[in-house]
Amino acid sequence: MSQQESVLVISAHAADFVWRAGGAVALAASRGDRVRVLCLTYGERGESASAWRAGQTLAEIKALRRGEAESAAAALGAEIEFLDAGDYPLRESDELVDRIVRVYREVNPSVVLTHPLADPYNGDHPAAGQMALRARVLAQAIGYPAPGEPIGAPPVFLFEPHQPEMCGFKPEVLLDITPVFDAKRKAMECMGAQQHLWEYYTDLAKRRGTQLKRNAGPNLGLPQSTLGTDGMFGELLATSLAARGVRGLVREAPVRIHMVNSGSLATAMFPEADGMVDYDGHTAIAGVPGTAAAVVLGFAGTEGSATGALLPTGHVTDVIDGITVTCIDNGMPVVVVAAPELGRTGYETVAELEADTGLGQQVRALRLAAGQLMGLGDVSAATVPKVSLLAAPADGGTICTRTFIPVRVHDSIGVLGAVSVATALLLQGAAGSDLAAVKPGQTRFDIEHPTGHVEVEVEVDQTRQPPTVIRSGVVRPRGSSSTALSSPGGSRDEPAGPLWGGGHPAAAARGRPPRAHRAAHAGAGGEPAVLRGHPRPDRDRPRGQLGLPAHVGRLRAAHPQADRARHLGHPPGGAAGLEPGRPGGPGGAQRQRRLQRHQARRRRVQRGAASGSHPAVRPGQRGRATTS
Image 1 (spheres, one colour):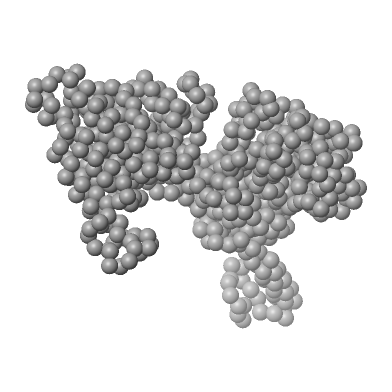
Image 2 (cartoon, rainbow, N blue to C red):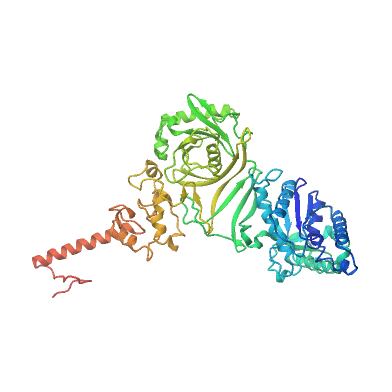
């Protein structure tokens, strides 16, 4: 962790943070990080037996445990705060959660340490962990009534319980605390009310150190001779995935990604179920087979990535040669313009736009002028800014786009370009924003492009001037989430307009049926497994509502009518089938030729039988004809 980062430790009792995470606390503090320990109780009733036996009062025990914890925190290099919520039992309450939220907002932690969410021997521990996770979620909500700014999504680590085997604890981090173990031992010795645990946790640290050496010693550069049983100390931690989504508090696992080309960070949020990454879902990428769980890649520092400002010209709209545009930079400098401003529909195919030399000249002049306004200088030899033409959505999305990079037409749209376009849609009065299907409070946007869709997430604080980006990211599939994604208009499979063949020209421009037509396929039982391992570029899809490529897989038992229709070359049940006269599916053309040969042979046989020059064929007879 860097010196600017902070750690929040949420401890049920006054001594829990010492036994379970003292090494982690001391290690962070030794690196210059700010560490705040939040003790929800003093452990006065359930963890101060020796003081009770000595005849001390409740107030005296609280004062004793507070003093011990303060001394221990000082030994570790941490700040400490007490909420005195009462232990045995520690009761969850909205009021207590609110107090924890306020600490989150104050500390703005980079990392959170707390208890696992299962402990059959001490209910205070999971109660503290559950409230820590609840408060973490609430502290992120911009509308939650608590002082301070909303926090990000700090990763949560769960420290080792007293009896891990009985708590279902599955460690994922083995932390080397050897350099700071003396500080942890000193902190433990501050806990005079629980002296019986000093040696227990010293021995435990030695055992974890042995595991560390045996499992990771060579990776730490340790010589083989040191891989014995002495000299190292460790602590176990688990990520919040081990919480298994208890009470719906933990649904995604964050993974931070360092992007070498830009030096910035991205955070991938992986859906989680039962403590494991969940692959099942409904998110698709155009040209890629199957669907999968949605993984949101959140980008940090995208606002003004190349120009230094979200609105580099200082205005939501500018007029260039009589054309109203929005110049925006949220990860990618983009000039956004409504297609009708250039005399186009925005639904043209890539080939049509490439062949339109007049439009090419307009785009070139537009981006050269915009480059100067955006502070990019002469962009004649640069690839930015991009130019995106906008049109009303035609396939159930938020907006339809055609993008030029720099003057060639892109057959889709870049990820950060889509983020910038979606950001523009949120700005009141921005060019083309009146064409978009955007609802109040919407943060996920389905961007249509010539070959499909891309989903992005953007949230903008428009109460500030100029507007400020709160977060932005792109949604990508991850294997196969049980949570269906919804487009702004509702279900992704709801019809978004007229059916194929009589619908919007954008459908033909994309070379594939509108998304609404996937409903027939889903209703028939979904995609057979054989289809998932093959490429399915959109341009190869037949013009039918099943939306399947002609060269992939065969619809079997789940799709008997569709399979029969493909064999015979006509749609089953009219509008819900394939285009009349066009065979679909793998080997469709081959089956059609075989059918034609069979029909021609029957006709020859029948003509021969009528003339007496060919053996007769009895009705219903199969196989080769025989002489009667």
